[in-house]
Length: 308
Image 1 (cartoon, rainbow, N blue to C red):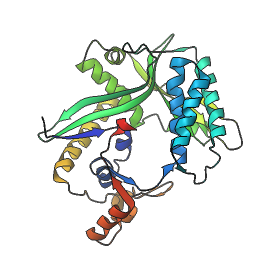
Image 2: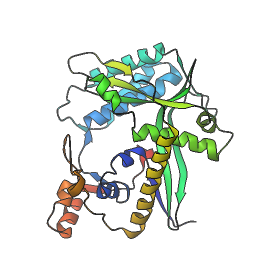
Image 3: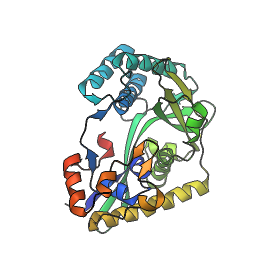
């Protein structure tokens, strides 16, 4: 049995790689804050659960019952979004149902293993092998569809409370999550055969976002982005940056030395919603104080994006 370190890397981790220390804390140390679940994130997971189950069973009542069970099962920190209630969730899920039923131009690929529509498709690619570290490229794709007169597409649901629709979709043109999904499908086409992911990855493949726009005062709206395709040069750049990150991760996993605080130089210590969650750790007067903050305010567990 191998004693190599196995690291699972997904797009969520890549999005936080602007600061090496943030990247290290999340992926290598597996740190997460000690507090309840964020209500907005939990609400989004509940909507994703409905969108995963309903296309297969077409039974809105049974699906809604399972979503309610999931939503009630986990306490959350409400913050300023207390209006994201179970009644609001029900209304949103019914909007998602109507959206799925009306989307007759997109036909779901079918998983040959269970004959169900390809929703919440999980993958774990044995991507890079180093002397002491193996890196798996992981992700969960919300849906894979074939347009009746067009390309195969990877779709992703996003819940948001903004109503600046065009601005919201623009940010996903070069989104690492969508590019990673496209890259993963191409990897399957190049390195495997006789499976549906390889078949899909061998075709012209685009991506899109189904935005679920939430409001306290208005009914939930769903809008679809334009179809996004990526040039060969864009995918080559993505692969280069991915491999560069893998090299860093492999070194960190063995050395276990905290990377430098890049936020002091590139401003990544702060963002639109405030300071980085590790700001207190990094701004502490010495390593002893930083370690104490981690013990008091964070928990350590293996970073596993496929377990969410």
